[in-house]
Length: 371
Image (cartoon, rainbow, N blue to C red; front, side, top):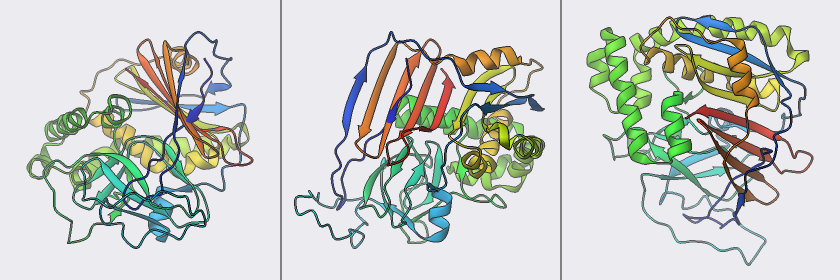
């Protein structure tokens, strides 16, 4: 079963409605041989990272990341109902504009004022507004877009008031971390796969409780906040996560520099000898942009998971990487922009985002989670 990709952009708050085409796909096709290969694993505590090299690489220079867009001010994220004045004039007189509505827990509005298409990854956290949120699925927002609905889940259940009286959002930076944060695989997976707010809250609470137990110096502070990003912002938590993340980051950055010509494009992640996740990108350059916050996401999962001595083999990791066949596949497409495909297999889910923009047609990001 070949991975394809796309997603839906649906109009809402003063938003031009976009056409989304659900595309059910039937199981039974044969997945082509993998073009991915594993490099020597990097281990830090109970976290094992298998760098992944690809036989192909693509030009991803035109894509803007959320961190880049928020830092430059070209990307604006705000609560639903606060998007007045963000709508741009349309030449197409047939465009449909929906009326404004008030803020909603699982809805934000995003405008991309850049001349570059914006790539959003499921699991990226935006902080501010009435609650911190985590993006629920991968998608591409076109250059100079109209306001679009952003499917999100709350990761701060204890607040429903604008932070500092402002309704806009940042990328979720914590302390000395450059750019925003990506939620740990446990939280990220509940948003992507379950698509259930209560399960997201349950995983946030579980992560918070585990952090209190494993970082006792921060227990009082962690216990005083309901914000996932806030937990990650405490100094003692940062130090604990850094103790796992920094050795991996240093080693992997060295691997990328040495093997750029071999297209190091992603990783397979194991915690306590169990494979939990894989992230694969269309280019080394795109991986490098996300790597600083991805490695902290993986390290956070390791910190909140009780350590064991078990190790996973490269053979097991390669098998996880190669197995993309599933029992059920669904896809959503926004014509000319992207296609998002979700495959359910035996004990895993795969999510692929394929760019349909001119001169692309390739999978820009693939995530696989153990289920």
